[in-house]
Length: 461
Image (tube, rainbow, N blue to C red; front, side, top):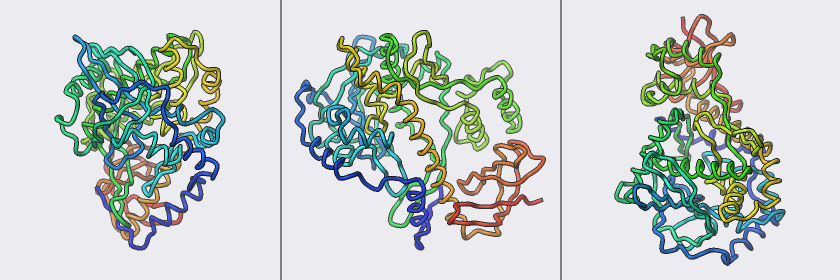
């Protein structure tokens, strides 16, 4: 873990340059802000009162745009997960200024010094967010989780809820959570194992603010509470996806598995990392054994992530089963409508079919056009994330020109090698011939250009 102190404001200047380069919105047009203020004053009229239900939220401590709240209860051998999702459609109407701006943005953009939200803060961090400061309109999905982790959507309704408490990943205790929370996440994990799912969550480079003019650049491992909480979203999204597919409608998250050539390359990579991947063991089976705390295994997890073909959105098509290889299931995104445009429409479609109503024509039409909009937004977010990491690496290393470092090769091709520096959370490229993944190399930092967000290493020897 590395803290960057920024007394000269080099990082701050660089972040401003990134915002300018990628045209990150600083605010919202006046008509959108006015529409948000008006929407925030709307009184729910189509929502049943569920404020007695003991909902809680679990998120990063600093989050205020809270999409989900949950409660869990036993029902014989099953568990009933009641997952409350922000009712964005209650605040945003088709074709109104809020809707038009959301289609332009696609998703929330996150940077270390702040975010460009999908919806104005008066909604996304106020009237719509499931904060524990008063009743909020929501859509409650009731998901039945069987003993083997199988999930089924039991119902959906518009409801008024009141979150009891805002819990945080880094401080939550078992006593804070519903009694069946751990058991539910265990069941979902067991079901993933049985399906052969292979979600790979390697540590990722992350830049975050730690105080005035201070930032942190680190490989951030996932916390146990974060993984357990993700199981609730996974269960809900899979149950919703199955319900939508059964009704021949929906927007699905799909991803192809690595092909035979990619798997062959991964086996060579594993051998280079001196990892024992038995020939009889599939990639999915082996991936579940990897430990992100081990540098070589973490690097191999990154290799697996890069070997896939990437996830995308697709609308329902007759005769085609939408499939997400990493989930080993039909999957949809519905649980983050404050941060992703597509989720609002999936929620609306599910609410309709669960209550015996036809899916609104506007929702069906949106399913056809959303894949392109979401792909563009995701690509922009990825470019910004990479630019922020490059900037942080340049600022952090600016005083170390001429210093030498140990590094591990994570990828190699005819352009050189990608390396992970051992003494800092830095991943970069170096000109190197005759190296293979897993090789240890010695490199010297020969140049840093903060304005261009670039660092240059040269191999020693």
